[in-house]
Amino acid sequence: MANGHEQRRDRLIIRALDPDPDDPDNDRECEVQISYSRLQALAQRSLGQVMEAGHLVPDALRHPTSVFEGLRSDQDEPLDGHAGWRCYCTTPDRSYRADGTQCLPYPRQVFLVFVNDAGVAYNWRWEQADLDNPGHPRNHQTRFRRRLIP
Image (cartoon, rainbow, N blue to C red; front, top):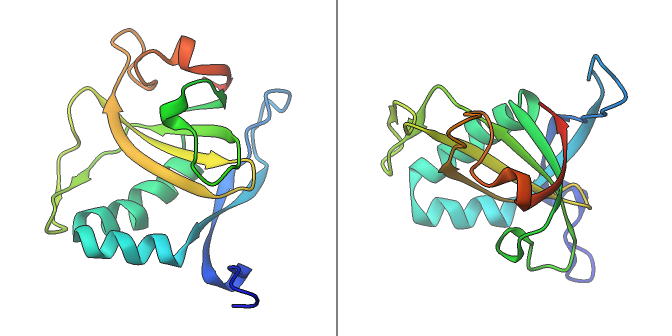
């Protein structure tokens, strides 16, 4: 690390869907990064959180059920000063227990991955799904500025 700043090699790079509402095929890709220090911190908490980062986060970034842009809620904003940019949503076919064992997904919940304007996935978590649109998080209409893909 030069001058105490993280370098590109200090991050895990994940290929992600780059949703463009003007591209009906949505076949463009972008890179999303997760810092290794973030992954190491997860390992201190539970193997289940590591498994989510290794399996659910990439799945959400590559095959989202919906993507929103422009976070309106302070709770969703990153603390590093980079503006919240996108939220990738998915309904995984599995979840993970704290010990890392795979189990059924949480009922009526979606998995969200928050990516800032620098292309860094800074947060991910399970949340309640919208009852009328199960691939979206609850209150998505007021929580985000616009929906990029259904």
